[in-house]
Image (cartoon, rainbow, N blue to C red; front, top):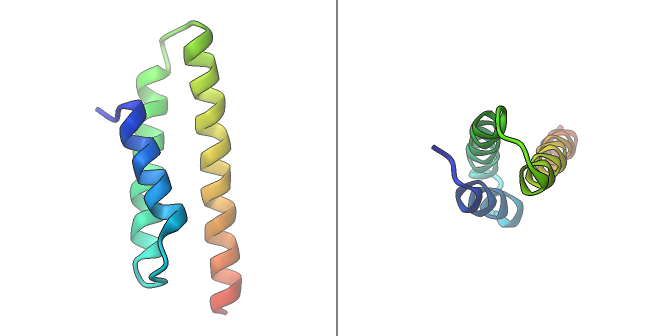
Length: 75
């Protein structure tokens, strides 16, 4: 079960990783934690849940963009 703190910690680790070789692993772990948290929130409702869902969408998009930029730089 991915808690709110867990996915945020994994996201921060991925974003601030300076070792290019470790980045793909860190990004994948953050994406997995974000997706797991989104699944947990799937059937829940409420303002806090909606805000976290929006935050999950935004950070997942950010990680995908980050991965894309890194791929273009490496090429």
